[in-house]
Length: 508
Image (cartoon, rainbow, N blue to C red; front, side, top):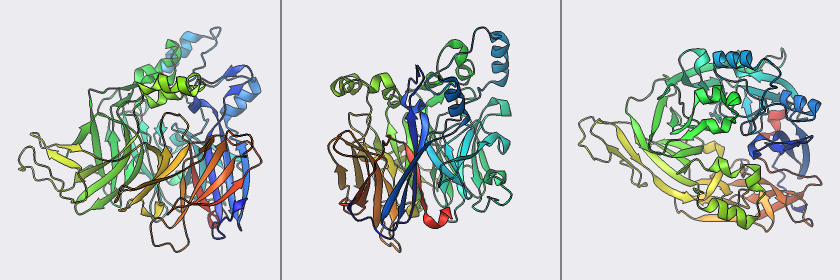
């Protein structure tokens, strides 16, 4: 241990990500396919305790029992045995329209009520014990709400209710995007009933194109509104349904249409009704929203955008194994950097406003919403910062006006080696970096009784490629990015994706 972990920092940081890429003689094609490895960092009385465990999903059990990969993942397709009746299988797949997905939940940790789930973006989740990391049980969204896909990035309101969003595809009738809510008091641990049994549907949003729904990884939420960005990065449903018989992976079923527009849906959380104004912007790709809030009759939201969908291609393992200079040369031409952009949506729109008028009245942004002939608003964003991904913030300011966000610096390497902080007001940027060290997504934890937004610490688990430096948990002063402490970990740590901090009282 170098430095001192603050005594007030009490709780467990759960992290999730791909951790096993080879089973027997078989290997995954893509980094996002690796078998989920969950690890936890427990902060107690100035000490840090580490634990890790592979997620004992059905996928993990089937693969390890067979000593080979037998369950398909997004970028790795396992084809059926031709000796089995492939024609009847094909027919049943076409009838069902959507394949049965893996439960290798490797993206994030979600809280519903008092239950914690390892999650990805499919209908299956695995409930875990946040202390032991054991699997408590497998959960299927479809037993509680008609969904085929759901995001791994929910929102939590001030009361502790969880909001999330998913996609209902054809086997449930009319296809829709679905926004739903799970109340904070939904868990019944005494009777071992899942929190999802109390799920409530907030609203449905019809697909713009029935056979080509938008892919989405996250969404925005303010005190009164949900923001859903229907981007032209689309899922080809027919290709998805027949992928296994076309000898293509599910990843190839996602297509980006750069000639299309991006629709922005604004939904009232209380009524479930969408605002009637049509908001749109140019074609873009978005994975992560940062924050959203209401300001003087406007909804403001910030997200990390790309000009294309090439990011996923970078993470094929054959690509990642290239020497650094070769990787840079291969991806430099195709690489679209992440850009933090601010969009502003006026809530009051006079239909008689002259064509070409900017309806954004806020003085602290250059974002525009320009009236069109058909009374729709064409949104022009303000660029805040270029080069940060995996954004995080002080979650007490979620849905409220805020000033700071934190993230992983993305340059020419697929694995970020810096974490940074952006001051949205002054545009000042500070960062932490150390040679041969690769930090995970930064997580903000507020100091007790904190008033200032950046009064707290940043937590990040750091992988070291230097054999003389063990992996460590990094604790930074969130104001200055000065190192408060670094706790060395006597174990091999993997690069992960996302996680969830649970204050001590929540794990009792």
